Image (cartoon, rainbow, N blue to C red; front, side):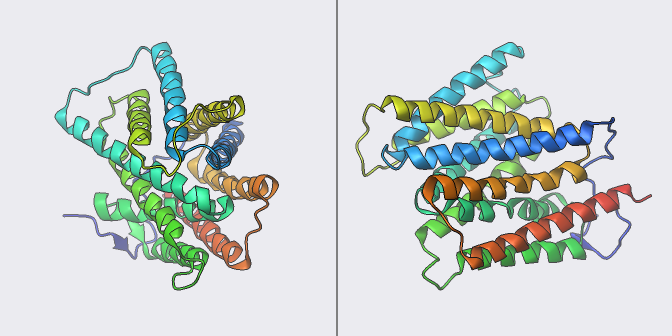
Length: 313
């Protein structure tokens, strides 16, 4: 019998994570890695937003993709080489579907980032953990109590407050930001279905390859040109930051207790607000701040609730 999505029981432990076995200092290390991941990711977004104001976005994606693929290949070579072709046909299809999710998310996110405030877009992205929790309950049958269902609803309400459908604040770029969330949701759900023998380097390289190829075919109002030294430097910096963000995000989940380190992902909102103000002079309005507060509150409650259930006998 399929496990019900919503259960009134308070004593059912979520199946997503085993009880963590941590050593002294692991939680602090995990929190530091989470903040590093959040800071590196937003810094990459800032560099891409800045450079794509003059350089075609498609070209910026292509150049950054080539740099990331080179870095991933070097890392994979150090770890024993790249596995180019999974043995199981099912994993090949899943890997292709995941790449579609990665490409769709990257194209829509960077397109929206060109025209939206980085703090506003980052706030929308913070709804992802809540939506992934809901989607995992629907697709995989993970147990989800009514309290966390309410938290998901509160998080969605926060997103609605930020994009404000029916007002001048809601436009094509807001839709692209929401579309990016859905593609990332697809990507993460598919990732969970991949065989454990598929190396992280293989998954990341396929995603980078898809995004790089998409940059070639992405329509652009501006002609491609040779980037200046400063533009190439910013793209190289963005690629390096994205790699740091990705590696530290993976390492975070292997260190410390998830319930302790997960709240530190909201460092991304603080960093996005600071960089948005310093680099682009952005000042989020009251609706955006209120919506972000709802999303963060709902996310923190969900983390607290899952941690409590996991520790229950």
